[in-house]
Image 1 (cartoon, helix red, strand yellow):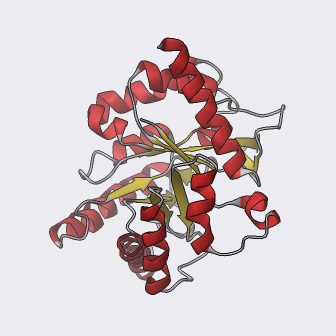
Image 2 (spheres, rainbow, N blue to C red):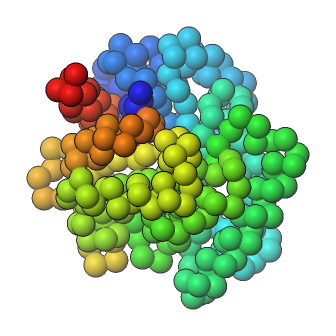
Length: 287
């Protein structure tokens, strides 16, 4: 079964008078959501004790947890000191993932910087192999998944082909398909079921059913320009896509059960519930 939830609680949560992470699990459960992604995008500003206490509450409500690592991870930075920092962000993310009791660490792979795209990709592949083989040998990946994300800007490593190919490097790597990013980078190409099938077919070919079934999904509408992503939007926007219903049909048709995280601009829980209703209404029609 597909699980749905938000990345953060947006304005709804705070407008209702709530304010801390310990109130989130029950609030989400009461709205009919079953997943949550906590973002450490701007750094790890939380104690392990807080994470563990919050994680216990998420487990009580049966909310499945993923974490987003800092945005400034870059496996293609030629500077060895910066590479060591990137490794540190992954190590710390896994530590918090265990404290929370979550299972998926989402991260941005790399930016090209002054390297050519091919040079950046080669360096990223090499460092993925070094870093994740080492983590696996140390037993730090047991029961956990590392989820590199498709990106929305042209200078970032993160086309869906690149992310799927990177995920062949280690058994604990599964893709995060951010379909808003893909749509922005490709200038609005995600419109039909076949557009989504093209991406998932490539994943099935390269990674197999189990990894594709266990993929992580980010979904939101995103404004874009010539170089890709500009800003996230809410589902009420009528100018930009993508729309979720064609993807929902493909997930049902392919019998896939990923976790779908809504990354709308400010109405993440509301729009996550919209997606859940679309998905289950389609399931009910089949039955």
